[in-house]
Every structure is written in structure tokens, then in C-alpha cells.
Image (cartoon, rainbow, N blue to C red; front, side):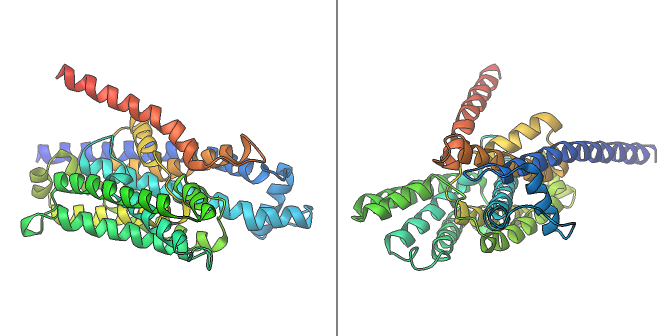
Length: 360
């Protein structure tokens, strides 16, 4: 009886701590996200005063009337708001997919590209461009990218599922590396063999990642999928915590290990595939953001998953804003910005993990 009471008290204290961290983290990241969003809407080749941006945004929400010109209104409503929302949605999707992969693989160096989703999306996009389909409709490129990402996911899962329907994480990891290498080789071959220089240029630009093609149609597709996927991952955050302890312990506490692992991997792959389809290959968001937040709030996924979504959105929006303004009117690819920020961080994690292994 006493042990039960103590356990309940500990559980209550743990839940209270998670809520506090989630509240504080959401407030800090959310406030910063709003400030960066205002900056993103105001800056660019056409500079718009923040007051006009705010008035247009409020009018768009049905509050008051804006004094901004028709040109400013068109730029904000048709170009910058969709791009800002798409950056937040894509970043959030990559963030939650990254934290899920790191939890499932029990490795802080894991990210969404580890199971070949990004490589599959890249191959699909390159095929659409090489075949000339991307020029006929704006939907063909993301459609083929999503098909390629889905094909990579199915291939990896087919190889990674062991006898009896159980998911082997080691097999998934090795299959992901193999599929990424294979699809990457095919993608490179298509780029080299394409005789159309303009098509080659478009392929290279897409592979570097970018959000310049963001439109309301893109937001309407990406945002609901990312939101739904994030909700599912948050709902299974407790199970992900238990999986970190060990499979046997998780089963003893009522977790259906095979089902949960398969579901979380599928949702993470779906979210990543959708994000990659509309943004191109954007590296390191799913690596940098979850690990940074983990260092600040701890490893509890009940807070880590939602804060990784917010942090991912903030990280990519900052990168995209820098990409648009650092060398304006020339726009740097956002994938280059995230790689410049993420690659040193990855090396830092790699060195840190090696030192920890040596100490053991």
C-alpha cells in the first residue's frame, strides 16, 4: 500500500515537472517564433514596414483594416505568409520525425534521412524533372518526390521486418543506409546523363532544398499531415519513453512493442516524405533540433516531441529568413544554411559520443 502511494506521488511529481517544462518551453519558443515570423514577413527584396505587416495579418484574421498598399498586401498574403507557414510546417515535421528516430534507434545521431526517405524523395523529384513532368504542372514534382519517399520507406521496412513480423532496428538501419546509397547513385546518374542544362540546374537546386515555390496549395497539403502526424507521435510519447528503457520492460508495462515501433516509424516516414516532397532535401533539422532541446529539458518525450515540433519550425524559419536576406536579392538555398549550421553540430556530437565510449 505504501509503495503504491509512493509510486503515485512520484508519477504526479514527474507529470507536473513535464507540464512545467512544456509550458515554459512552449512560451519561449512560441514567442520567438512569432517574432521571427514577423521579421520573415517584413523582410525580403520588397521591404515592408512591420506595422503594415502586422495590420495585414490582423486584417487577414478579420481584425481591423490595413493601410498597406495593394502590392504589399499581395506580397504578404500570396507569397510570404504561405512561405512562412510552409517553413514552420516542414521544420516541425522534420523535428518530430528526428526525435522519433532518435528515440527508436536510441541514438542521438539518428535523423529522418537514416531510413532513406530523403534519398527516395530526391530520386522521385529528379525523375519528374528529367521526364519534363515538373514543367507541365507544379504538382508533379512533389507527387513524384512523395512516391519516391514512400518507395524507399516500403523497401526499408520490407528488409527490416524480421521473422514473425518483428521489426529489427539493426536491419532497418542497415537497409536505410543501403537504400540511401542506391537511390543516391541513381539520382547522380540521372543528373549526369541529362542533356538539358536547365533541367540539370533545376535538379541541383531542388536537391539543395528551398521554399521559394511555397504557395497556399502546398500549405494545405503539408500542414494537416504534419499536424496529424505530430498528434499521433505525442499520443505515443509515453510508449517511446518506455521503449528507451528496454523491450522487455516495455512489454511488462503493457506496450505492444512491435505495433508501436511500426506505427511510429511509419508516421515519421510519412511526415518526412511529405516535408521533403515540398521543400527538397533539407538536412540536419531532425538532428540538431531534438538533441538541442533534449539538452535543455531532458529526455522525456512527452515534452520533447511537441517542443521539437515548435523548435523545428523555428529553426527552419530562421534558416529560410537568412537564406532570403543574407545575399539579397540573390537567394541562398535554405538547405545550404541548415547544413552550415548542422554539420559542425553533428561533428560535435560524434566527437562527444566517441569520448564517452572511450571512457567506458
